[in-house]
Length: 397
View (cartoon, rainbow, N blue to C red):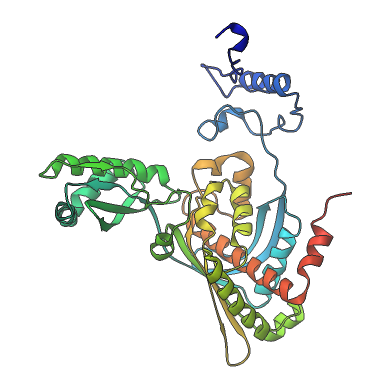
């Protein structure tokens, strides 16, 4: 191959070995991009947060993405952890979204609020152990049950926050899948659980009477993807939001009666079954993504968090009981991206920053989702859906 046919190497991104988060290092990357691509970074380059606060959250920073934040509410919540009226910051570029959620919040507040309950909250890591045959795998599972206390001690030695609650077991062929379930305080806890489970697996390997090998993740912990096991056993917080909707209020505010809403839910259930959806509701991901982005949650966790089960019941007096169960709301009030400048401010708007606030945030998320479900369902039936998007969601000349 002569020099003229050799592939050219693309220029490497500028990095600083001493401090990759310094103003100079960031400026060099900005200038590199401008020279290499011709793109203007006039807006990306403007940030109000200290550069050194980015370490641990991003690599090779060049600036910030400025997503608009709207304010929805107030919504009255009658929860175990979230109690009172809340104004919810929502980061989105979708016109009508904030207005729609605010409309649902108005109805829920007028009827006395939405009740929220956290059923349970766990984070998982799920190693798989390999054997010569199924009998060996089954016997190993019995040994794990008999040594749970020692395994728990080995796992919890790596963290002052995480606590190993229980281990699910699944036998397949000559493998034994173990799904470790932890409580993680106010952190989402994926990394915490990975480190703790690795320590537990090493203890098992050293103390099991026969040689064995394992893979730290056997894929049933389901990071960043939905799975039916989450719907059954929970990942993150399992939260229920519920309310009884008076027929008179629904007709006055939403211009739709509860009987029509109930009938539409039956259609949605059939459609959801046909499509094989992970949520028989309408758009939980919309509200959750907007809150996640505003408050510094891991946005990829929407893949799991958006799953939901809507259940409704038309009461004898014509009122409508409406609930949504979100089995895997993965949120944190501390750690990760929650401490960054704008994200922390949004959490402070909700009084959800810091220790002891993660369950409160999960309840606010569930209440917000219920408001959005109620608003969109009413808009579709009343014929306002297309009109509102056309009026509020158009930013073209």
